[in-house]
Length: 81
Image 1 (tube, rainbow, N blue to C red):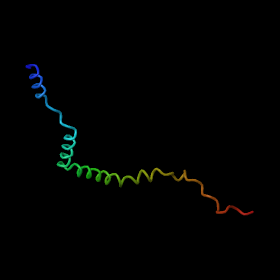
Image 2 (image 1 turned 90 degrees about the vertical axis):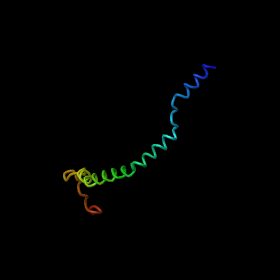
Image 3 (image 1 turned 120 degrees about the vertical axis):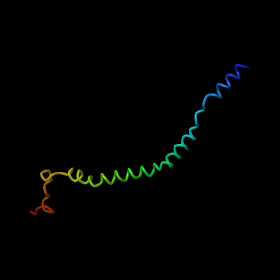
Image 4 (image 1 turned 60 degrees about the horizontal axis):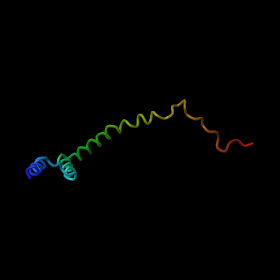
């Protein structure tokens, strides 16, 4: 009986791991308390606002240069005999 009592006391002394649902709820609550959603939105907005003005430069420069332009097509309908 003494061994059983020691085993039960040892089992009671070990801390129980929190359930997965409790960890998820605590994380969701902390995320909301810190207003992390607003911070993420601000970071995304300012990242877009800072990159967007520079985006047309590389896109415009990626096109073919004047020496790489295809030859102009002949007259519409070709030549008549």
